[in-house]
Amino acid sequence: MTSDEKPLGLELFRKWTVEERHLYNPAGPDGDPLYEVLSSPSMIWEMEVTCTELASKALRGRNTTVGFHVDVKHVSPAKPGASIVTVARLVEKDGDKLTFEVEAREDGRLVGIGRHRRAVVDLPEFA
Picture 1 (tube, rainbow, N blue to C red):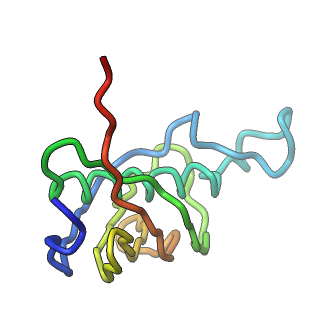
Picture 2: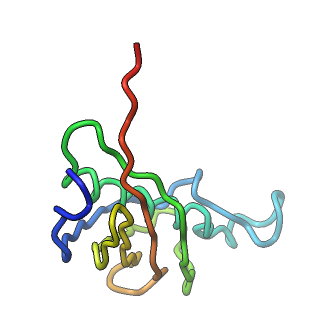
């Protein structure tokens, strides 16, 4: 399936929990755990995973997508154990380039928002 066959408006909600592997401590590695929060790279990774899952639902055959652009703002903290919902929406297609709006929320409170772009590619046959 090519990106031309993907309908705009596809949407995926993905729920996940802020775990130790997602954390950053602005007080440093030996800082008080009280200050641990969701790191921006972890939030962005979770957004990208959500976009990847959304794109894969519409792909057939040996196609997949690769990310090539991220433009995201991390607007509020999330503490360890927080339940986050990441939403991806397919908002634009240009040939094999897909653009997604993404956001992350904790109990409706915005944690992060932005756009992510992916390209549709064919997986090669391996012998």
